[in-house]
Length: 300
Image 1 (cartoon, rainbow, N blue to C red):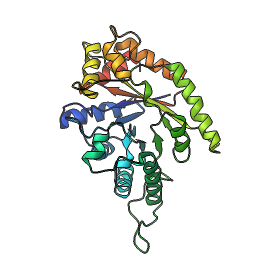
Image 2 (image 1 turned 30 degrees about the vertical axis):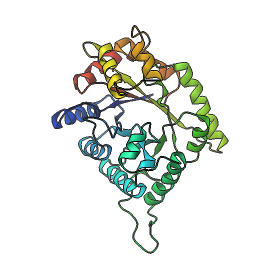
Image 3 (image 1 turned 120 degrees about the vertical axis):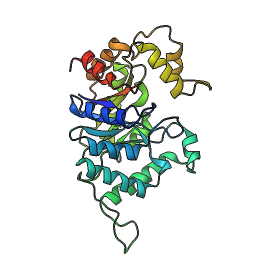
Image 4 (image 1 turned 135 degrees about the vertical axis):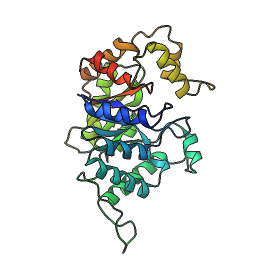
């Protein structure tokens, strides 16, 4: 199983801190480097320039997004941006895509809220055509540059339900399951892995689908409070919190949650048991020492 370390995308920090994260991650033993998308969020960085900087500053690790909302973008412009990053990185980019969780992001950029899933399918087709160097306007030049990776940038779908899995099986290389980022359930992930495999088989695909997941972690001096504070900020502390975030915020103790050394070890071991191909560790601080703490806990 590959283990990818995330960037402090959602926390206030500056140039030197960002560059230090790049260097520490690329020095190893991490297999990848990941960034995350929030549009309407204080201090959050933009995916495209951040990935471009990471591509230029690293030599070894794979670059990930987890996940970007494809339906709210112009797919031709986005295809060009991603192809440029793929060239800058020497073919190390993987794109996690989904419809996103926040309608306000769509509204902020003037994107429609209807037909998100259908529009994502349509955008994927545009990306593929641009990367194959098919001109978007007949009789004119294609959109360059061409990606380094044959077939273009690999797309991993951030989806969960059966209908979404069936759609993803038409165009993705695999699935990233976002449902266990707070409460890691190895048994449920193993069952989802089987459902992903079945969706691929039903679509007539013979290759094994990629299967991965993100997990938030905290290893600072007060890891439980560190993670709780980030969850409150991430899910808007001034509004009603539902789903896994709500159960975490009301949990009396860390228990089996992804908190502290025991929580991180349980998540990593559970991911291996569930048959994940790749686990992305999402930091809850901008402190670069968190990378060293994670290495120490995992013994890598």
